Length: 578
Figure 1 (cartoon, rainbow, N blue to C red):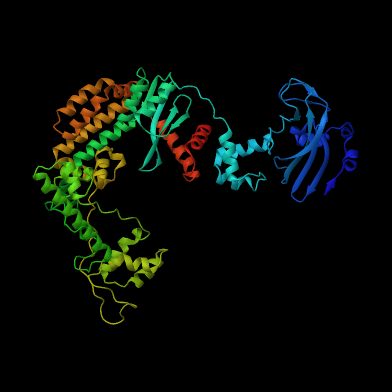
Figure 2 (tube, one colour):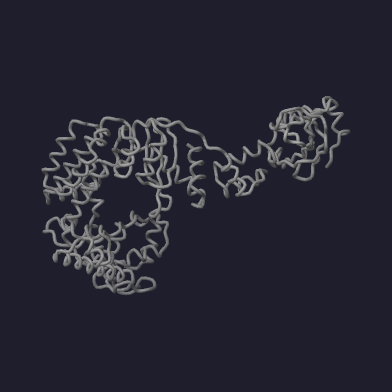
């Protein structure tokens, strides 16, 4: 469809003065001051032809006005969509001769700085819209959104627009938070810097080295407080780049460090962890060592049943771990160092250290059985099984009458572990009494908690533990004095950290050193190296909690770009989002 001047002129009186009609001016304010030539509607595309009504133009070099028109041409500009249609602007541009003899430019084209940039093919409005889309979603996702919205722009175009925008110049923060983040998990890491007072990301560094952090601090003088984790890298970088700044250790990491010390104590007590779990299963008998077969100890099958493929693989893996453990112990008795043992056996030094600290072979913790929809009906199944009904299909039908929504296969698999021999297919026997068992199948024995779970039982109050977990914790404390001493020290340290009791720190360090626990003595040694930062954590309110929250936002932005974007683009998006 084509609208000429003859069609538009009667509708708007202002058109005869050479200006854009008033309704069009209100819809397209950025075209104010231009003369409307014609409007062409072709399907979903609206093309507006405009030109400048002035008879002169200003030279961009010397600034003199010129009225000597040499020629003209048209520029096609992509604009913001209007009424669901793509809007294109055909801008008529004239070339002028510069009248100033000393000017280096002989011929120049008139410019429209309020509408479009030099040699640009997009108006300022569409460029700003694509910029916002690129900052919010990145290249590929931004292009997928821009296309249905009527914003013409490919992935490369959107990224080019974002890269061309100059990043905001942020003031040097007085209180700086620093932490590392994974550019590629387990391989390459960077550093994130956060202004803790303004709650915004300041910059991203390409590595997490002390030299890189120190260089940034020297380039941005004025940082007064640095909140960091317990690592030594950022401590060294802060001392080099801002020696007068106050370093504040993160209180959450201090609590995590004391929990790790408790875990190292428990790692030497694997036998006691098993004995306590066995004692809860057999309270009237003395605790016996758990069977070596982890599958049989899980209670998921009878001992005389044939091993499944998974059971066999677990036994093979356990045998391999046991052989490595025996080799580590034997080499340690011959006076070999941990590094030599690790190279000879083919395992990591941390694994060697964990084996030597354990004292006995550390069994793998059995996975916790996940709750199923059959759990509420298990007492009824045990009652019917004791009464002699061993047919899975019949049990399923009875459970259906009680509201069980699952399939019959779930019931058959559940009761299969109770059978000493494979079950008989088909309906229940119609003749003869059904075989009965004197007692229901025993429940599976208690799962031996892992070291981390045992730490949870020891360091949390009774309100957050189940009754069986409280019994297990109390049994552990009765069995070993080292575990009881470690729990007391850890709880006292956690209390002084939460209350920021600076006066209680020195007495606690003395108690921990005199406790006789090597794990806590090592913790005190490390704490003394960083004692000024630890004391600052007890006197200042700053911490790395806000930095951790910004890292979560950083991960979201990074994963939106599938890890293919550069650090410069990621920095712009994160700083803009903050």
